[in-house]
Length: 371
Image (cartoon, rainbow, N blue to C red; front, top):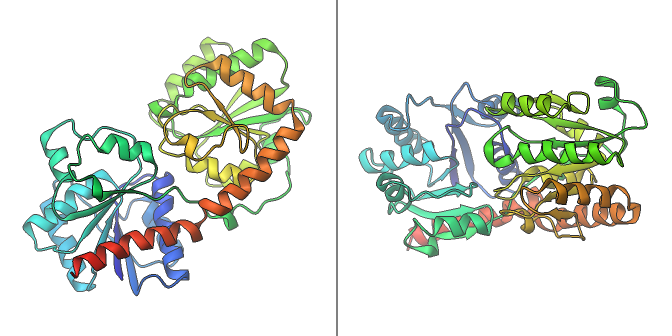
């Protein structure tokens, strides 16, 4: 297999991390003869792939319909003698289809889809999902499959390969109290945290309302840490101010040291209301951090209620507060969930497991294309 992975995303979220993880695993386990990542040179993917010494090709589209980019993609595929293209975001999906339509990119195209979002909202979008060159759509969870069924005519193209994390990246075993020191948090306070972009479906509003409820009850001595940035950050800060929670909630911003700070959490509180799976939940398993999460989207495929974590009612701060108190007040439950969660991760979501499943799906496309 000679594989091109392509994304034109400039940000750094779970999907971009997946590209790096897959590249590493495909190389380590010799699943590919050769491979490349095509991405913008001003993206986090390019920076990290370059730092890691990966074969990365800079390509910068002016728009989702940049025909020059589409032509260059076809030329790169021909030059590298690639035999399959793995697409990782919506804009690169469009560009790969244009490359196939107009510039002779006749390789099988495989799309990786991680969002629970309707794609049948206009003709062009629906058409590109049914384009004949798209041979398979690999979804991160079954709710992603279900929402795509409205648009994709041939449901046989749809399959599920779960989210992925690198358990070896999260090897910090002892708390160092680094967040306590950084933010002057009293030593006897617990840290309840979340790591997520400030976007609508992450539902930070419910998260803040849950904190408000917990502060009102006064049964938990804790500080609440939000890690991340995004377009709704100022709106959430206004909500915090309106509720008088400025001394309770800490905005830690975008961080590159997640493997260092996540183990400092005493509980991971995740209120996302439409999450495909939540890769950060897997990272919490790796770090042995107890989890309370929303019973929404693909989260129940990752959290087994009362076995690996606790699930709360979507959008209900009372339910979330109840579950937080239940988890923090029950040491036996915490230990059970930490042990079961880590084993669940090892069995189902490591780089080794997911890379093998992903390779099998890609290789099936290759074999079928030769028939």
